[in-house]
Image (cartoon, rainbow over all chains, first blue to last red; front, side, top):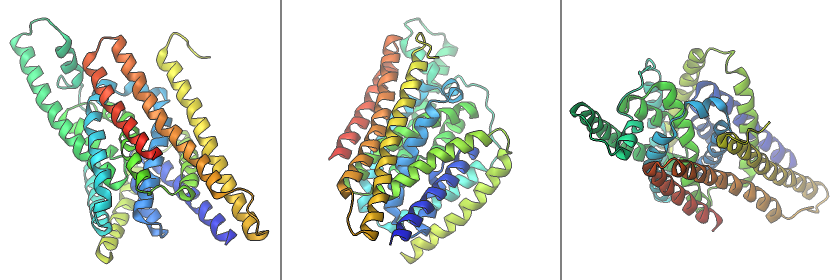
Length: 279
Length: 107
């Protein structure tokens, strides 16, 4: 019995450390890998999602203290989009007890494949766009009369920001329902819809994921999906993994790692579909 | 050295301190859980009660959620001081949802 508890705890610690290293190196977060691997270890899918949410909250707090992230993130855009994401996360977490496990496994598999295909495309290095909330916010505050050209920019900015906000609600619902940070979806919305530079989108997404996860975690606690015996080795693994990942970040090629990560995710997606099929 | 004139620098130090406290609670809770398992299986006497270990871990997790709320509060006051009303209002909304989540977690 002791060996079982000890080896189980150690196994979770190792798995969470490795997934966090991958998450940090590829910038895609560890939740996508952690949840399917935990289900392979015979942990209930909903409990695995609870573990993942707590790990995301921890990971985001660590990245929040790093100087690079603070400098790059557009907190104003982040805070605006976060209103949609937290609302979505609450809705997603509320839906969780009513959605059958095989459906969740199927949606998870579909999201994994969607993320692999969208992130494997060439990174779009946009120039800073006029259509971001930064300008929208300035225009809301400014009492000066705008020229025709400026008004068009503001109008376009409003349209793109509203569209991105809707995308954030959807990403929030998926985050709450699947126990992931859905950072990849957030980056996609900011990068493609709001036309923000990729690095700014990534840093802003890192700024947001922890709050999205925190919005859903209360309902996970309420429904007893938070299992402490799994969480403590997982959280410690996240801290160690983030530390190691940050050390190797400059040394390894992100492109090769991203391909490896995508390959692993495709296998895990197949496993989730298998789980959905067999119940 | 802490740069007292830079609120973001002070805030990131506060976050780091909070993370250390939260992780300490979670680690000690986990350690007691493992010790308890050992003593229960080899000496048939649990040293700590299960509720004690889980309360320690729970406190650690609550601190992590609280730190997220503190983050939002920081940005609220930051935007308010710069008279960026729209962003301050969005911070209030996000903060309220997080506080609601925290209350649900305690229940």
